[in-house]
Length: 103
Image (tube, rainbow, N blue to C red; front, side):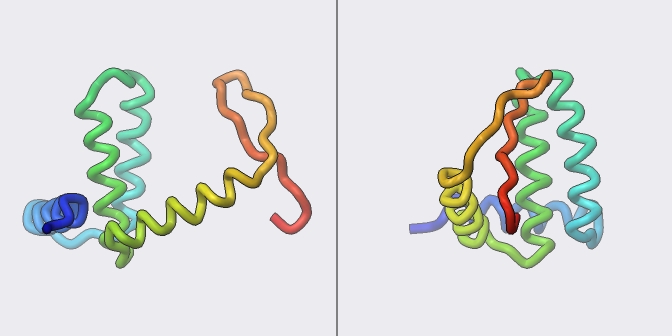
């Protein structure tokens, strides 16, 4: 059985390398930053969601991370997040964790 997420990451990387040339993780993340701004302006636009996912997956690939790595990173971070204390939402609805000594 194939891993559809890994196949997707490989397809994205092959496409972006052939069309846009060799890039690096930072250039992809700068582009992602722009696309997130567009998504904030129209969070109902499914293609802006896709742009953000494509760029994040491609940036990870350029940094040497496959989809199994990303899955592991998310699992690790969720374990940390579940053990944190969280503050109140700010004016934009963003909730941040409460810093403790050593973080």
